[in-house]
Length: 346
Image 1: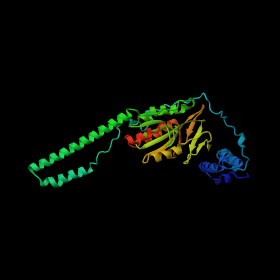
Image 2 (image 1 turned 180 degrees about the vertical axis):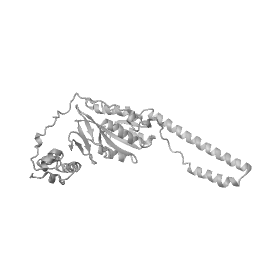
Image 3 (image 1 turned 90 degrees about the horizontal axis):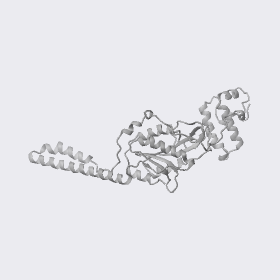
Image 4 (image 1 turned 90 degrees about the vertical axis):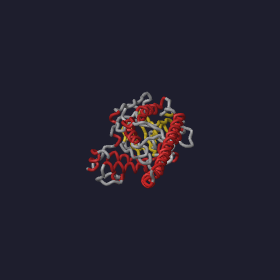
């Protein structure tokens, strides 16, 4: 018998599935981690229990009562840390594989002040046609028709002028600019520059999309958010990360995992930023995305759980899934909203 029992330590039954074991480990690791006030020895035992029970062969040995292979003897490729000379490359995607790519063929058009609602005019016109006009004849009928035609013409002209003035104001203020701000220029900020190129190459294909680099949180004067993409009433806040190769995931509260262990190799403020921008822009759908590039030779993979507020994503996943999310709603430019987001560019 092993003391303490690995199943008891994780709080699962002996027939628990791999998913249940993984979920139980994550839940207990958060509470037992030394940074959260737990005992280093108990956390080490918890990790050992997970490594044994998550491996089918070693779990079988454990279940048969055999001494499990010590954790220290399970050799893994040594991680040498970040490679200062390494720079990842931007992926090249086939546009035909992007479900939303055809949206780029739609005509872009900024929004304008809403003209007076025309529903009352339609009701009045129908009432005149169905009730009043049958009671009229001759010159009176002609007079009414002329008055109606004049009113409709005036309404159409005013609406056209309103739209023309709105477009003129939009052009004067924003011109044809679709990208605001610049990504970081320091040597270690190459991840931001790759994401900037990614956004310009693919997501600006969507009609009326606007891209921002270096946004501050309300009350701040620093570039707290690397990038943002605005389409209609949907806003995506993006951070570019250069982290070690591995498999990344996140929980609803923003807790990051790498290779099924709590990730301590980097930090993100996306959860805070999402909350701040939701308060700043009521009525706007705001979500986040962590675009991760390897900081040395190796592969980055991420969990396909895009329901969490700020999921880690590979560049390819970001283009496919965030592009599809932005394209799912009409993206007429809201001038006031565009102005508010642009004001946050540092």
